[in-house]
View (cartoon, rainbow, N blue to C red):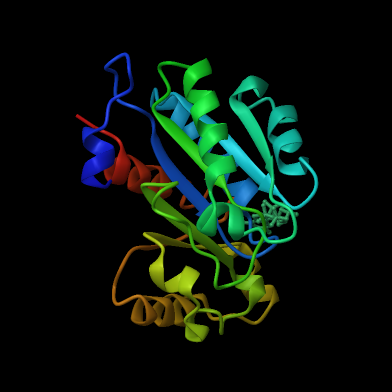
Length: 216
Ligand SMILES: Nc1nc2c(ncn2[C@@H]2O[C@H](COP(=O)(O)OP(=O)(O)OP(=O)(O)O)[C@@H](O)[C@H]2O)c(=O)[nH]1
């Protein structure tokens, strides 16, 4: 977490919620990761809310609201328009406002998760919007993705490689993909997940807690 975020307080003196981003290519499993994380983080007593970004719909927000995993009022939707990265990087004001509204509605909020719309490998988050961010790729997207060294893969605080269960079916050597990702990222954190079955999700929750939340 950045020092300014750690030191900042709300007008009432309480610490504002930590803000994290989850970005990545279309269909890599960003919503599935959030669906898997919500019960794990909630069971750890973390008070959270989610802001989703879709191009011209509120589909991801509706999916989370219907999931039964979270109070629907704790899910806010931003319509990103044609350029999903614009609203998380160049001009994140819509997302910042959505986060502020959730914080005003839920004063004890500790964690705000911003899910980007599906984008490309160049997608990154503005640090005006989030304190720390995850980039989600998946094995079915191709084992050459880490070699392409897109800014999302290189610059994120945590790289998640999802859909590990599909590796045998798409001819991907998961260990080799992880090694290449590790080399491209110079050893910065990577976690392999199967968001459908919950594998690796506790490790992602640990990483979030250690990065942006005060833990005993
Ligand atoms: N087999 C498998 N399927 C997964 C996994 N994670 C997600 N999926 C599936 O992949 C598809 C896309 O997942 P989403 O969570 O919608 O992906 P997303 O990144 O939020 O998609 P967009 O918001 O459209 O960019 C869905 O059919 C999921 O059920 C996984 O770990 N294994």
